[in-house]
Image (cartoon, rainbow, N blue to C red; front, side, top):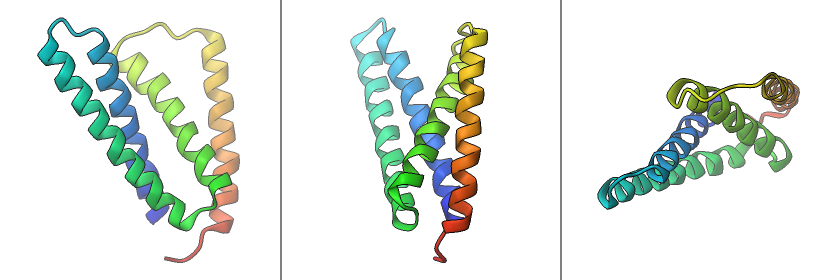
Length: 117
């Protein structure tokens, strides 16, 4: 359960960090740029703290693909599609499906290896 919460926190904060940094890239003013940069970097830092917590109970070879895979899907599906309304091509959908399949396979392995807290 702890790992699921940490993985969700990592997903939310790192995906948010990418949204803030994308917003800063299109900033019209210096202040907006700075605010979005600060928000993006703070969200990224909190995400790294969640990832560090994940590493306390999961081996690196499981924590890394789970966390990075979730963020790929978060940025690709949640941020780019829902927030920025970017075009999603069939090849990108196939790639997202492969990433999701990989997450499921690694997650199944993680469930068997999870140490009690």
